[in-house]
Length: 403
Image 1 (cartoon, rainbow, N blue to C red):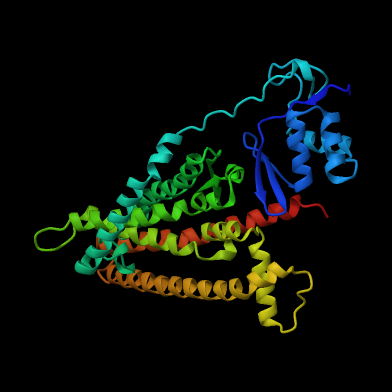
Image 2: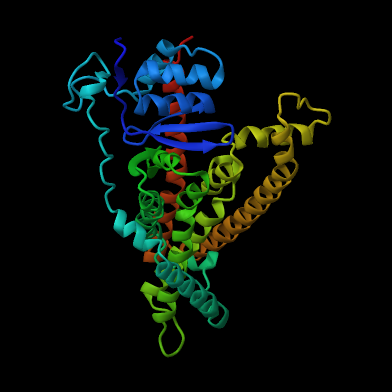
């Protein structure tokens, strides 16, 4: 390369992470952790010729960088603007003469950013707090609208309950993921939702890689935004149920459906505290602690708890300091969530069994009998189908894996 050669770089972000720097290209969600000196060299390459950047590095660090290898790594990451990709003049793949250097293109605007900023503005937070407080007061004063396991059976027709609840819950789950996306876009970070499936269940998957372009403390809200949505949705559904009460205090069908929806929303919120499953709380804690392998930290804690004298030699001092409080916290939260979940499941199953048994008791000639029959077949069939599909997928993976 000539003495006046400059590297054409895409728009890059630099976020200090202690002794290292997280460098990223938000438009392609490509990120790399560089040592501080490497990040400084990259910054120099953005504004100076290659020889000037090398000379600066030699003076600052008293050693000569392997610039060819460094540039090859940048190209592999997609950080270098290749010739012909942006209409710039060609001076070789990814390089320009200093006199003909094209300006660094600005990143494209993030869709829905104004809406996202409004949803997380001060007035919005005050509204969320008011709705949550109002719902808490209503649940204390009106026991009929408290979401309880037995109240998910909002109608006497058991067969209709799962279909209606799925129709209600799928949009609410999407809204949960949408809040993650909008919290990221509020910061100008790329984020999106994709639709997938696990067995025969539809799932929504959120990609928040773009938040790594902002400082660590600003990433926490995008990871917890779904839980904020769950709290607001839960509160709104409780208030809807309260508004649907008659003069006698009974809750109408829309209100009963709202109570059932609120119950499952509360379960989703509680589920987020199972850290080892990489839930919303897991990602938030990993961000705050500056450690992405919390699952590994949890496994280390469990091994050391179950087997005294387990080897911790591979742990850093910081890992050990975090483990002293994170391990017990994980154990307490997981135990509490599992206990609450099992108790809830027990109450749901006993309530369902009572209703199904009452339906069978009316005899084969009644509608209640066939409602219970179809309902039981549907419930049992879901678990059977899930088990069959799980076995098939496992066999398919085993056949496709190299031996």
